[in-house]
Amino acid sequence: MTYSPLYPTAVPTPDAIVDVLIAAGIRFVFGISGGHTGRIFGALEKRQDEIRTILVREESLGAIMAETVGRMTGIPGVVLGQGPWILGNGMVGTIEAHLSSSPMILMTDFTDTPPFSLHGPYQSGTGDYGGWDARQAFRGVTKEIFTADEPNPAVLATQLAVKHALAGEPGPVAVIYGARALQGMAGGNA
Image (cartoon, rainbow, N blue to C red):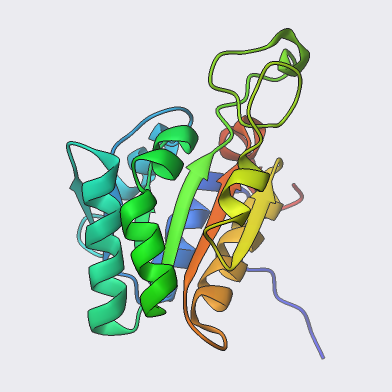
């Protein structure tokens, strides 16, 4: 059996992440840019003919709309934004997705600042000194959590999030990206 890579030449990680969403049939992403997620918003802007980005004024609105889309279509609804605000403000939509078994993907970031994770960076969700632990916090309201600190794992984590949002009893799944994951190139020899 021959192997053919998805990306023979390297592409920006956010572009590959958007490709995953489009391939999954996702037509809408709701959210507000913050932290390192602006890179994904930039990739979404280039693909508006295939996937629509709806900018919201507050994360709870994006999470509620994503849950509603997931419930109505059976295709994961997506909310995108900065870690602490997707968790805190987006909680209403996330809990509703959990209780009503709506497929939903929370795409967020650690708001990390490598290599300064032990310097108590403001809003950092890595769980290191001076920061909060995004993995532990999202674990209480999602059925699965995927994290990625490098480009290729970021694409795989997004694919797994789609799979697990739909597998078994549907529900909310979080993908938490590190800064390096969204800054790099995926595919090729990366």
